[in-house]
Length: 365
Ligand code: PLP
Image (cartoon, rainbow, N blue to C red; front, side):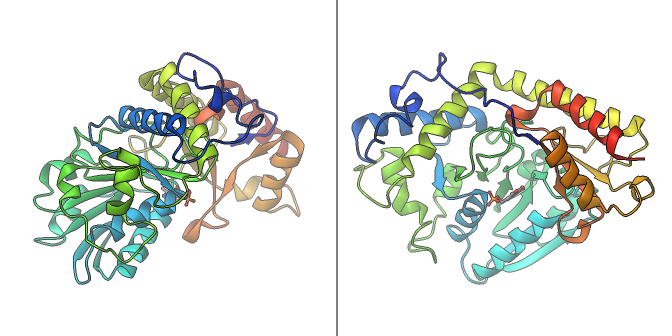
């Protein structure tokens, strides 16, 4: 849910002292090897360690959207013929299978009905010695949370890869405590930053398994590591997307100034209000209680309440044009069947919940 008139609550504050970050539109961007920029990059990486709750040295923003993070996670550790077990209960689990298969993996999908959470034991039992077990923590296509801790505790020699694109900043993500080996995210969801970067964190155990000359040049973490972590020369690999890193730095500062737990509580409060309000109006939520994401609520389209000659896409258009609220349609198998109402990052405010519920009251029979 995006309220178009909403001011982004980001800007100078205790964690955003860098003039470059504030004056991004008023003076030329810094160079990617400029000392001031390197300092800002280092600080952004340190902030990422805080939100991922990790001490992993190799934690940095991949240049590219969340899918680049997904691709970087697989291409750097999967060799041709490796077994990769993937939990699939939505579009992004399916995408993981596709990416792993393109890396040459023998993919073992472990499916759960869309709208229900994955069973960790079934993932653990799926193969005796997988190289990787991969799961989407917050499945954006269905609004379901898949738990990671049990997988991390029992993964054996496998690396645990977790897609945290929609979870980071919105619900608890504990990379170190849960034994996640590679976690990646995106900037545009609960971190409240424009799209364009994929924060990633790689455990020392996964670093040992990074391939020499993986099948991607651009996403070769081994080559990028020296530049981003400062472990070697800050030599050119590719030109860092400087303005995006300013934005990420500032956005993370806003999250950390609020406090990670306070940010999670705000998402929980707004998601709870929204879900209670929808249920009180007779909507059927897709995810079961206990596995619902507060930041992404998926509801079945209320076919019987659509006004005559209006389809679900028409209601979404009206929400956008009349009220300035954007909600998502269903993806993949859920296309046309459900709505996905995001209440994340800066939009997770009770007043937005009030607005979307009132707008639905006005638009539906
Ligand atoms: N993983 C999940 C869970 C997502 O929700 C998304 C995007 O919505 C992605 C991966 C891909 O991210 P991007 O669209 O930023 O490439």
